[in-house]
Image 1 (cartoon, helix red, strand yellow):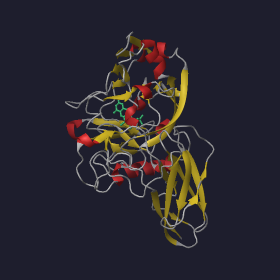
Image 2: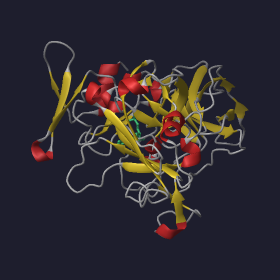
Image 3: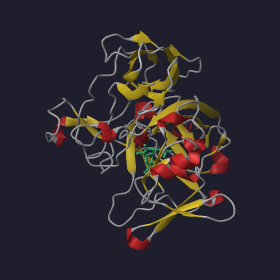
Length: 388
Ligand code: MTE
């Protein structure tokens, strides 16, 4: 399907405003606000009040996701246009020398690059049963990019963190609507001082776009996307975990899996940090009708702070599993693309399943652990197809 038809299929409520140049999609909705998304990058619009864009899984066919195809997750309004020369980042709290740095000063520090698969904790939420409230992400709130910028630890070292510094808090410049609590979260000092944790200013070699946190965002590799605060304006070293809505009750996971649908005691939860092991089939598409002959099965697999050890495919409902071929491109926090060449033995309906295993011996379960917020969905993936 071409990208234009694909886009329209997913945003049937949208009104297309024709005119010179690239088409602009606008939506009118309650509160008489409207939003324009220029271009037609084929993204699935999950929310247009705050921009939430999902990548169709068919886009998982390049190791690095092009920025226009990279999912966007916003809890509130993006900051208005920033004049980057005026932008400043303050570093304070449990430090000997509080600092305020400009973008020009940041750019003088050594640049480090990390290819990271960024996944929203809520990716796959719509697949949990029973269903849970929240943005109903399908499988595409994930993407891989080369993030570059100074190491967070180089900035923290200049500020001289005191021995009392245990957590590092980020505040974004998001525009907070009404009484919504601001997007502020913290990460433990050990992860903040990791050589791969960045103040990222670039994505795939270009300055960050507004959707992805321009001019600077945190990049906490291998962890849920929520750890990587966008549009950062303040870094504060704390003597304990930040206490606020986006640390608790949000982004917490039950200590023990309970019965699906049951309430969870907030005391019996922990913050969601690193991603689990997961694979997604990117081709053929679910519901595809194929000619007889060989089927090229493609997908991606990732495992947060661990590495992918293998991906296996089953075409007989999970009775037998055969290894997929992992592609050469790899980096510690990045997904591996994989392929599997399959010759269906008969025509008719088939289910193709993919299952990843990582370097920590974790394997995708047949059913994800249900939790009230629908985080970390990672069940064995499957698509149903018809072979003529
Ligand atoms: N940072 C701020 N300031 N505000 C946000 O709403 N969303 C977080 C994180 N950083 C968010 C944020 C979440 S939930 C995710 S999954 C990632 O950004 C998504 O990053 P992306 O939009 O660049 O893909």
